Length: 258
Image 1 (tube, rainbow, N blue to C red):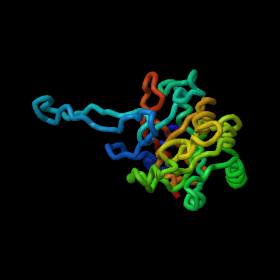
Image 2 (cartoon, helix red, strand yellow; image 1 turned 30 degrees about the vertical axis):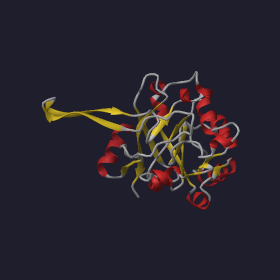
Image 3 (spheres, one colour; image 1 turned 90 degrees about the vertical axis):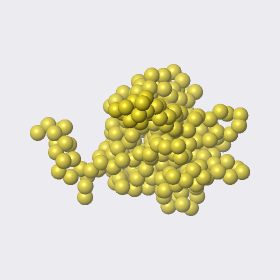
Image 4 (cartoon, one colour; image 1 turned 120 degrees about the horizontal axis):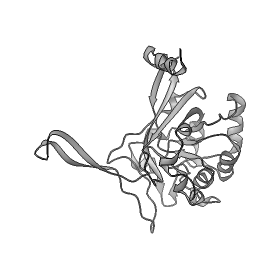
């Protein structure tokens, strides 16, 4: 039996199940809001062209309107100034979009402090219990933030001092980008940086370090609680937008049924 046949057989037989890690796209999907004077991307919307009527008697179809970085989406290197000479989303090698998942459960820390920042020591302790970060893998940060995915106010968690969502410290972002074999990281929040990431040095260090080192970020993931710490495979499927700095994407995990 070939390796592909084995996977297909395990899917058919129920030994492997598919977990959809994607937040659904609609007009109410929470999106990042930048402060003035910075312009924001448009929200997702559908424009009906026909619906089994005179413009299209046998079909229904729409135009879609959306920013690149809306809902569950991937950031390509060219999205950030540090990766300006890097790949656009259509150029990301497909093999970098499929790989092992390393899942860190940070729900306890984030419940206590929504501004929690992941440090290198946190990852080192995870590695002691679970083994090293996998070659070509994805570090997925489970924070429990996906429970807010249908509530924009709670999801962005903004007050007079800014947005309060968890993320990665500047040193940890540099370390993940330069000293680990990962393809990228995935988070449950609206962006790969903490809500107060602008206050770090450099500002928005996850974007700066990861995208500047040909690594990628996925946001607004769901159901990470259904994944084991190790052993799952992640599949990231963005639109291959030529020149695109990112794309909404469908993200799946293949998990052994236990």
